[in-house]
Length: 289
Image 1 (cartoon, rainbow, N blue to C red):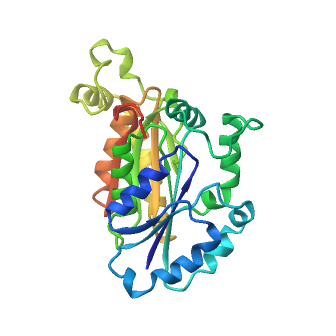
Image 2 (image 1 turned 60 degrees about the vertical axis):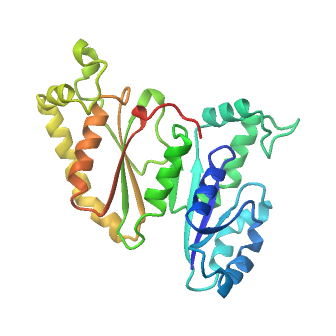
């Protein structure tokens, strides 16, 4: 049986993720008390649930504090043969505050004694036991609903028989560091095409920008250094039964240098690993999860 546990801070997209899994054929339950999880799993082994792809449950900070602290023990009590994946969704505090302000919804932990910003911070502390054990962490700060659904479909629900899923993601430091990155490379040391008038409005996917960067000796040296590191360690990560790896490549604005190098790395490693994905964060539009 396949069990997907969805968790994360309020406003990060948990409902979107649960709806996506429901569309994919999972039996879904929102806001499940954690203490009921073993019983649910036992029931899901019955024949009447056989037509479902698996079970998906959303577990968040509305649970009892003690149950959240006992998360690992509860997982260990599940019946043998359960393939469990934990999806943890999060976003930067500023993005969460903006979403609550726009929707005018009340945060589940906030009241007249606990303002929104403090409730958001407190929620992260309560969910730390789940976040620590997460199979896949997604930062939804700059994801649209459709991009989040695509990420779940491609990365969480991809070929279960394939090896580690790898995401190369370009980003701009000026818009914040992605919190879901497992490895991060800073490529701001390279000459910046932004300061070349004819290249400013283009991106690292355009031929003139690529030509400019490939004229720089430093570009090839930096690419080779990153590739040497990944060649040495990606197989080790895969052999350690790691399911997901997010590799972030950052420059100042996330438009030229990081886009070029992330794309170049993606093109190289897609030949070596079955599941390799590419995302250019700053070229994807504004966040609306």
